[in-house]
Image (tube, rainbow, N blue to C red; front, side):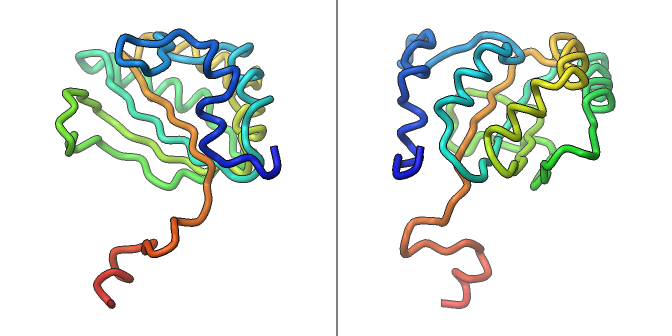
Length: 162
């Protein structure tokens, strides 16, 4: 999709075919996308690196977190071309949307195709069986990695140097 603005991916034909929540957002009320959805998104995805932002709400009690650890242990594949930029507790909802999340992971992939290959693999699909026992809900956002808009800084250090 050379020449297509990155935001066009969000409103593409496939995205329009997903059901909308009452807020107008498209909703998939499951813990993991199915392979057909991944393939549909693969056909629409912009070229180049992507960042995946994954917010998670664990099921109550220790079992939810334990099941998620089993998922991570089962899915871990050192051959995948993923860079985990951040993984840690979700501290606060700054905009007070009412959404509460327990954990956040931000990962960079060389392309959406690489991400799709990773989560479509038999190893990852087998590991995904642990997700329903682990998660109450999750939000996974795909963002094309790219430069910041002109006039913005990439780091807080750069801002304080001005």
